[in-house]
Image (cartoon, rainbow, N blue to C red; front, side, top):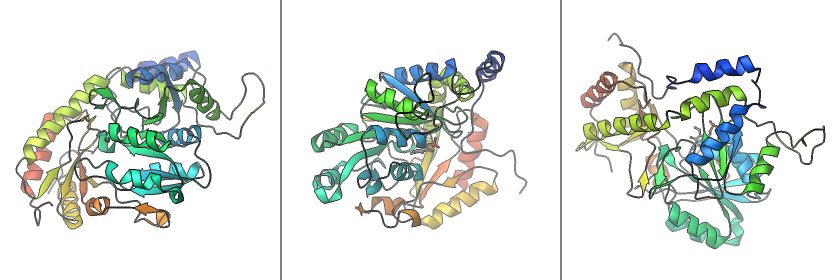
Length: 375
Ligand SMILES: Cc1ncc(COP(=O)(O)O)c(C=O)c1O
């Protein structure tokens, strides 16, 4: 078969003012982290998420690290995170000197299962210092339940909203439920800055501290430092791209929602492929559209089938607790994460995906048959 043009899973959609703002950085000689676009982007993301402060950093992983430090997570503590997430969530916990404690997700949302958490948090031996709730694939976690559980246990809630900018929970933007939330502007996200991250919070003192920590904790005018810190501040070049992207957030979210509606329709009634779950409480950002296959072999087969037709697709997150770097981490699992691990396939989801190309994906999905029903 001669492949037609390749259709990627998720690529940047740079059809706005990106080049103009980048040129302005060069003209004005503001290319590094001291530059007006950085604070403008902080204000814009805080506004979108309904929070008071944004702290711009080099990527989402660095953002999670600083949020954990600001939440007071310390060596010897554990941070409760879902077993089904990107490695960055767990890695940031290690960067903060703590250890992840893996909890499970529900089949109905692929996000943290509140039912088991209270008991995990209540056991002093678990030493849980904070919880990170991941809005998987852009679909908000069950935030009312999670905030109540964290409040009761006296631990901070951090939203890992890496791919969820623009998503809402009961109509309220994600990012303003936890003490801190973190967005990623990595190249595969709906909104990219080339690379970048943003912590949002309503805690002004914590925002100031995280901003200081992101810049070697250097005091304003002198080579004086008040903490061991990091070089995590976003550059003006990245913020220039990010700001241009944010101007088109609503358009890109609408494009993603429209793509999801087409995929939903194409998959309706199929026994061998299930669309990713959605809950009434959530309006997802639809960062990536995913399907659940009956088995890991089916998922590999589907990816191969699509790739042979020059259509991007890949097997998505796999249980972290089953992977070598995290093998010794504590966990209390119900089996859902392990059950879907290796069976979730992400499909082309770029906001720039044109209807003819999505029709090619839909036609290729129609040609494929799984070996069994999805359960
Ligand atoms: C759930 C989750 N958390 C954290 C990150 C890390 O973000 P970054 O790549 O900007 O460091 C990602 C990135 O894809 C993610 O999907």
